[in-house]
Image (cartoon, rainbow, N blue to C red; front, side, top):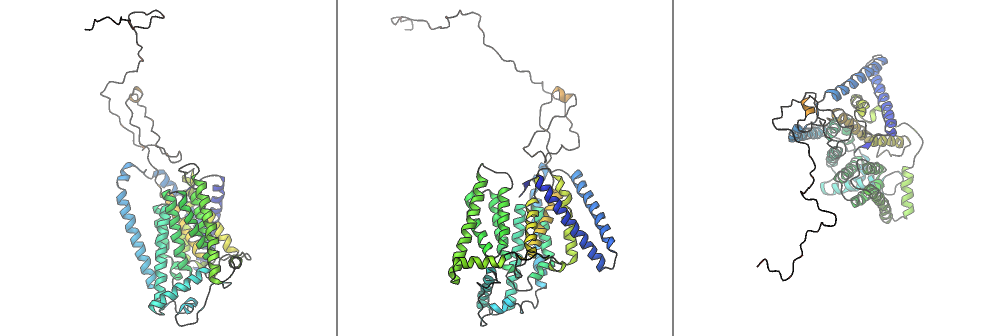
Length: 486
């Protein structure tokens, strides 16, 4: 997914640069304070790192080999390597989470609500509880009905849901951003202590996270395959269902709209059709969910809608960010160091802007979190961490992205070529920002053993006899009784 660069892109880049550098400096100062060092050491370290990062990105852009036809032949080797790295990271994520699962989940409030034989608590319709929490409790009750009231069973479900969500995020990022971005995001998700801690306490966040990532992958697949605009109607309905479960579903609506509006339009008028059908699906889905839940709860449609709005309406402004809410200090430092690479990779391309929608989405998410739109049971920190890892993946992807080398055109040797002039390269249909000069090695031409082509001379038909005007008809009239051909 990539938008075209414009003035708005540079304004968002300024916002990205300020947020990234302020976060990096604050983290560096906090690390220095925890180690008993002077705070200015952290600021100086940030300056030195930014200088080294900028130099590294420039050197990659200047001396990195271009993508050639030989690399296309070796594409299978790269695919095997990426698959191996993915499998290793997923296995490591699974093992790290298993090691942290011992003895967790017994004291969770959702465990006490879902236990068979206990007090039947109905969450739906409660003023401070989302529909996602009710769905989660019902899922746990079904699980305990078959397996018994075992907290370990619920913890394994948490583990499988998060591991599946991480895998779905990998495939979605690979579709939307690229292979390198997907691997970088997967690496962060594998070792993230924040995500590991999320499975230790039973909550609806992991169930909703799995559903959220599944719809994200559906959006990426539908948009990437260039399917009929009618495919976006069911996508909008599914997005509406997640919006009704929790307000985080509107992030998917933003992503779906961004995917529709980004990139090249394959046919005239397709983009408005996709957008209208997607929005129509969202509207129909919200109305349908409201009617269904009103029948389940025995309330009016207006009552259900009012309860949903009262749960997610904005409150007073406050800053919900803290270092302990999204991982250890070291993870934050590494994450923001990688994000800083995006300050320089942004300038590698003058037309493509793959980070614009994600920066805008992160800004909207941060603003919604500051006004208390998200609930405590479904915090915004999970999705902010997800967006930051996606942006880190894009930063690395743009840094190491190899441009395609334009080979010299196969032209006949002319007098100009014999004089030592280089033939001009042909246009391969690439954007002008992506065109690169041929390889620095000079092309050696052999002497042409064939004669040079002669200049075409247009021929004119001519006859030895001049025909006067009006005598152009050469048909000879013959008497019908003439039998000369017998």
